[in-house]
Image (tube, rainbow, N blue to C red):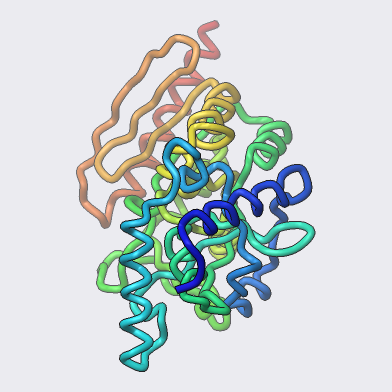
Length: 303
């Protein structure tokens, strides 16, 4: 086993000093994300925003030791040391290397047993600069917010799915979406809503936008790893959401069984229940949007 705990802590602090003020995340193209499956351990840098690097919290040596034992047992069993272990989620950095988004303890364990390379998943997250640019370019006062994983994505066994994308896009985008989502997004765009998707998973934001473009609809923003960002409580999470909330006069929170309409200034809200039937979900929301547009038109004439 390589190095002591004290030495490893010193190496982490050294890496943080090296990247501070010099390194920053850059976007990675789809082809590169698909081709790079492993990265050298020494090309990965700890994330200063993560509690792993916080002196008052720091890494859990119990977790690191557990991963070390798992990796060594896998090696003894002649299987890859990351067998049944998820790849480390990273962002590419300028001038070189990758910032760890999720998987610090796995990275630490791999380094301490002298593994040269680690399986990685490269993602492009939306940061405050990306969000500010989207908001500055938007002319809309309304947004629709949807949970990507719980509301839009579905398993292959679901009977109410959109047709899979044609080849070769079905090889690049293996996700399946519920029936009616493209039609709903088209109506939301037509009604003057920006569309924001949220996920607790580590999706690449531009990959999700590209996926929906193949269904001929536009997604404005994708905020992923929501729970992790909220836990960081700094640039991401709550501050990102505050930026978005301050932009829009009205927000529709669209769920599986209801739609919640909230007005920013008055805090007024209305809830529109849905039947919960998967085959009519989209049509019920489209009907509700048309009703809201009709109400808005009548109110405008009255004024």
